Picture (cartoon, rainbow, N blue to C red):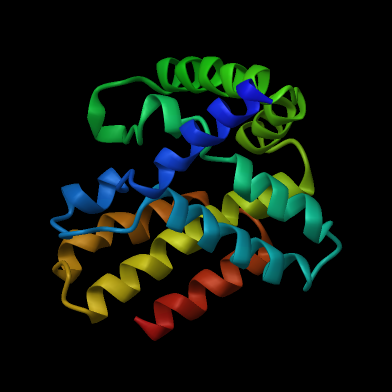
Length: 177
């Protein structure tokens, strides 16, 4: 139990870990990684209800997808770290968390999400992008950052969203913008 408690305490850090992309965009007091993961989980659950994906699995993957950041931090594309280096660092971190938790399923779930090998993983990956642009829309409406600063987040999501329902929701968010 002591290792599990240590793991949970480490994961708690995500509540105080700000999303660095928003900081780069000039948002003061941006959402935390934990807040983002919560949003991804809600979006994934709602999207899964419109399709054939397993809602519980989608929520689980959403909760797992950023756990490694409790050890490596929120690494952005602007940090000068290659995708391969980021993947390796996060793989090592999720393995450490899984060992502490006594749950190898954390590694399997993280890999499933990261590699996008199932319909649920692809839906959660889209939910990750949707949550990002939804947050950008909120920041834009709250004047937390200029719209032109947030355009890069919209472009990134447009390039990455894969599922039909994800594309439809992204288009609706663009219309709402």
